[in-house]
Image (cartoon, rainbow, N blue to C red; front, side, top):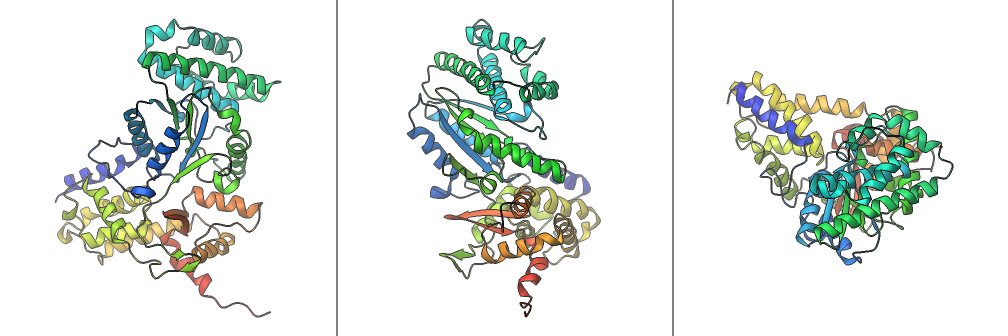
Length: 443
């Protein structure tokens, strides 16, 4: 193993930000669970049991880096195999991550996404279809877009994001505007249905879960926009005669009661530890390594770089997997990549063992970074989650917003072994456990 090979290993780990297809050799089947724990199979069944020509709404969520885009590609393949027509696109092709979304802006990007798909697959027919003519004329007259094509709408909307948002804010009749955009979307859906000869049309809108604020106040504003859009006005997000799957931020279900109104599915972190609680009581598996989960994490690395055991032995890789808490992005891009980057200075010790000082150094560096994502006033909340493995805020004000922020930054991780449960990131255990160990102060 030399430095060039180590660079290739690191390069393979960086690619984790790129969504892969289920038939990609890097894809690990059953990574998040199998059978009744497979949320994609559950979502597929929900879609297929609904009438094909009705308007249906589904939310798909999960923390950043859990593999949502990859799993949505699997959903697409499964639906195509059931003779449904799928239109999947990335919402961030049309807006930025910091856009304060509204129902109107989301509907506009969905309709633009449908138009771009129809143009890419049936260009000449679509450009002469009334569905495109009516929509493009309206974009020029009411949205004031100029010099655009169906395929170029994503660029144009992103370029004029500020002016479009201003126009939406100043709408005097937003309900009528929404109804008009829904009509355009429905016409494009019908065009697609006629050309593909497939009755069921499913639209998958990816990456909306990546919406974020850049500061404390800005983040609170983003939370409010997300709640209003996806929890308050969700009925206006429907598309006529089609099912729509929106990939929404993971904190939505914490901040608003959406599960009682919309079918929601969430992709959890990989379970590298056993289930800590069952029927309200602690189990003997709490914080005990889960062999099946560790094996899945090893498979992730094997499928990206087959010679990894020349750099790390299995126990060292397992140690990094446990330190990640099953957070895929943290595991590959920060922990494993961090060790591989430093391994060039320890070529004589390869493969590194779990007790190698370099492994401890990388874990300690990441522990410090994770601790700095918190502030002391948040530690009691984290201590409560570490103890109960539930995520219940103390109030609907600051405590709830704090929990949403900690969830968004993956300080709090969620899992699923049957029922959903939560824990703080394992790198925080030493810090937060001290609070739970402190005796109660006498009064």
